[in-house]
Length: 163
Image (tube, one colour):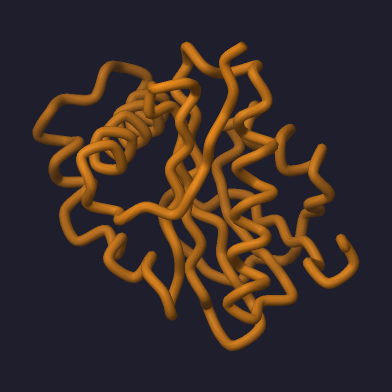
């Protein structure tokens, strides 16, 4: 039986880089309502701050389904007690196999390890599946904690009450 294995991995490993590229391709394509070009993907990945997703400022996680790199996500410590969930992605072929839930659980554990007692995130209104995932896992809408062009809804979750 095929199963998931998830673990921290360098954001610039071959698997992580490929997943990050697929993530950006999907979100950019959905935003523009057309396939993103390679140049647009490259621009989006340039200076995107991913280097902060390393201890002690954050963490990046890759999930494998069997031997296939299938999912990724990261956390960024915004301050001593608050972490931001970012770049949560499951490749389409692996959706519906519980990978997103396992990924969120591990990212929340990683945030706790770094001292966070609250997880926050922002997303877009058109990312309906992501928003449903967050709500299923106890995230609730919160006031905006940052601003930017792709920030339309913000969520938060108390990590101290989980365990």
